[in-house]
Amino acid sequence: MKIIFCSNTSWYLWNYRYGLIQTLLASGNEIDILAPFDQTSEKFSRLGCNIYPISMNRKGVNVIQEIILVLRLYKVVKQVDPDVLVTFTVKPVIYIGLIARFLGIPVAATITGLGTAFIRKSWVTKVVKKMYKAGLASAHTVLFQNADDRDLFVKEGLARPKQAQQIPGSGIDLEKFSFLPKLDVGPEKLTIFLLAGRMLWDKGIREYIDAAKIVRDRYPNAVFQLLGEIGSDNVTAIPRAQILAWQDTGIISYLGVTSDIRPYIQEADCVVLPSYREGLSRTLLEAGAIGRPVLAARVTGCKEVVEDGRTGLLFHPRDSIDLAEKMSDFMVLPRVDRDRMGREARLKMEKEFDEKFVIQRYCKIISR
Image (cartoon, rainbow, N blue to C red; front, side, top):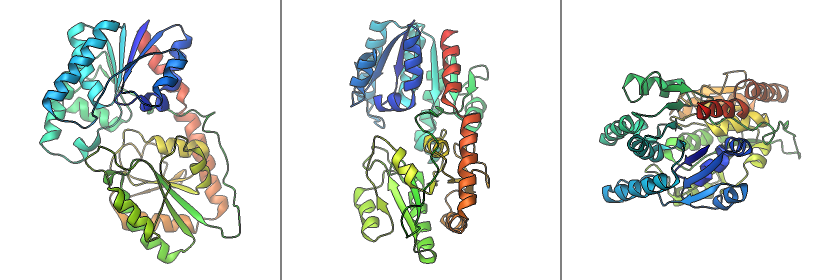
């Protein structure tokens, strides 16, 4: 079978869908990668995939540029003539959906998250909804990473009930992200909080900073870290100068960008995510698999991963005061209870979010 995978970055496919692509290749399928060229494209080529690099502005709204993009996507899809199209992220889901509808090719579309257009409602939200409805009209299957997104799309007529299915996010590779108990090293007994993700206001970074200020006054041994990309093309991106200003005042330590998050999670005592909304947070899955408790906002895409009081603590969204209280609660939590939370988090990942479950679902859908 000939299958095209399309996303707005190759990086996304390599980091989140590598296991699925590898499984399909091992079964004798031909895999074509249609995404912007980056450092992972050559890795896909060595894996045995065909690469079709295409420039794509993730947040661009220039009508002429978007029409040109659709025509380029159409040209590749027409040339490859796949049996199935598998799409991720907003523009590929919409544009490939329209192309597939015209060419009569079945599509499995994944809604990886609703993003800024749904968090900050405006005229753009209405336009995006109309485009989703058109792009998903003929999709064979529309996969959602949480029940709230699925129900919203069905309620507003953007997807039909028979199309909509829920999966546990991208799942987590439990061998790659192996369990590693936290070891106390050195005499200082610091407690390290880690927020990992793109540096966006919508990730709740303002609330994280404000809460950090409160907690540091109470507990000088608390350390607050930020890890992730600065300068994203997202409209809610935080300027580099602001991140560095926070670091200069000693509130946080900015750790930069990494291709391997595991050492940072292993060093942390607790992973924090005050995001306003997620599809299903990959960071929380990674933290749970390694065995770290998490503090997360009680929002879609986070609350599904965290069992309050058992695998971590939930706090009110966009509420730095409540976040500070939960951080303070964690600061006084005995090591034995922190370790228990970490073990319970790992067990939850094994039972509900093993990547093998997700791969099996996709393979079944694609084979149909």
